Length: 525
Image (tube, rainbow, N blue to C red; front, side):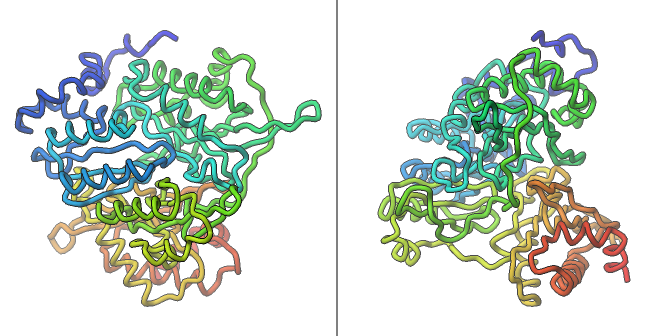
């Protein structure tokens, strides 16, 4: 396809900068940039650092984070120990698991980043494409290959896509980031509804033979203008997966909008074109694609796997460890890695719920593993199911301390209610929604407002969000609130739900059944 965007007028400044120099070029320039002060680095080179997975953190004073990509969460004990040692040496002993299954190390200099990149490359890891207008880390089923419920193993498909996309100059200048999800687990652990392109399991019967494959969703995303992904009509066979990815990402590259930075995601192109036009364009590249098939979908489990669970392999189990808000010490990661070697075969996984798995544990070792593990295998129904973004400790966009407020809510609500099932509270620091507030039971978006002549932290609230078969964004309650008001409203909402809910009813279903006027009346009574 011809890259038609090159002839467009009125490109935003980021697009002009990308035409002047490709983002991947910054990788070779890192040694020279590391000799400069932060103030000496041009703004566009600071932006290009994202292509190397390096992001200027708050405050912009020469310290950065590096985002290490873990496709579908794959992580060996050897890799984990290297990351832990690097975090001790350069990152104040802090590790952060992201909501896309990556690992971040904060508080580093560019010289540190060079050393870190060299060390992780020696154990088969990279930060290239961790940020920037490129294909990001591939989200997926952290249980792939061991999952008793998966329709088929997606490991090879994920790794094939990673090898093709990472550092590929053909796709190093997209209109914005491209988020890809591949999963054959029936519980939507890949969050299909909020990815640019998501593969979910499907089956099709043809000439008396059942074939396993995918249905595909496109154009999902959150931020200020959330869109649920659109389901296409195609049935994609596993061997067609990479070609389908190439086709969709090429359409995005060549026809995605590049004028307004806030209007450049694939969701905006899908919205403008419509499903039929997009499918016509896909068929130009892949005319033999089949349609139809049946979804292989069950209840959404939001990527949580606490405790011990059987694998598909006889006699083996995996352990789901809770990492509150994705933050853990390097010492904890190193200890878990060592335990994975002592009691298993040294294989770990990260999840998009910011937690950690240890896989391939023989049944005979489970008790000893549990005694030695530094992280909880059985968190309570609040602390085990919430999420938060980085917050204003490091992020330049977030005006609030998300992790502090989430913990405060855990403490406040945990004392007042006896939770018998998960209740998901997600606190995100700004409208970018990195902590997925719109798909939480209670989503909280931080900001600022003036109260009694003083600027204070302020919050908007949404309720009843979900993904999976019954995907819906949460209803945004009217008004902005102080944190004290948020506590009282959350207390009221939860008390109401626990009093009236059906025995197995989800909060999303409860909100939908009651209607928005009911909740507005409830909190403003």
